Image (tube, rainbow, N blue to C red; front, top):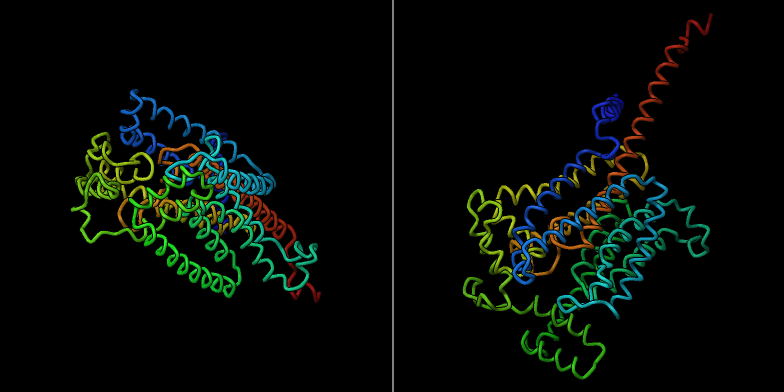
Length: 447
């Protein structure tokens, strides 16, 4: 009865005034609009360094707003997709992203010492969508679907699990060579999806154990790299010598040196005694931005650290939000991402389709993990790594990819609402048929 009332409420006339445009769940729409507006407002304040370099005050903000509106267009297109279209696009996202990731390693444009984009497009954003959607489709597929392939006719479960790992590894490994944090986000979200999808816990814990062993060995190898290179200064010199001598594998060695420096290059000095123009300038200015915010913040446009904090418009935009909006604004932004996951979880319980249920959890999960890592870096809760704040930080591929994720969530929420309406109508028809043709009691049958 409650489900029937909910379906009638969500399909009543109160939703018709914007129904032609906003076709999905209004909670998801509200979260997207809030993040959109926060991004527009904060990017005007956080791009002061880009404005100084370019000479025109409006150029960085106009570029960012253009990408935001382009992302909104992709969202509107995505929210109109049918379930069959979503199932078809997941394979396209995966294979296109995989091909771009491999190509980017060799011919991509370098950013922050790593090849992360090709023709202005960052393949990792496409891969996040592709891996999540393909993994959800495989986990929720029936065993009979795999029996057409000879290798799956025996020991199907363990071989399906190896297929999941293969799907994740084909994308995560090439990404990890240039962007380790993004690869870890994909892996963490994928294991979360497998856990939520009911994959055998024995397989998951065994894989996690192997991953821990590999991580320990990798940390030991990075320690050797760090000791051999003698810290950041000598590592930079070695990279320059390799580049001049034409060594082709210097990119991979350079990334290993970068990881080693981030993990092991620690000083005994407290952060406030470090050189503000040195290698820890990002951490120092980020903490200063948070510490210098008033209880209600300095208000929009009054940030003091935006002119000094490197990547204030991207990797550290949460620190600017904290400085200008105060703890309440920072908490509000964090809650927006958490509410997104909770709302999608509530919607996922209203559908009988395992695929829809799992993808409604997988897409917001990867958004929330990325947001938590960004916030953790800005607040000093974890080591420094470059991750944009979804839909708020400056960027093109990240905004488009996140907008498409929101569009798919809206499309699925619309499908869930239609399922609810159909169930409500079926229940009403059954109730009417019972009234017209009541079940005879035992006395009537005996007569």
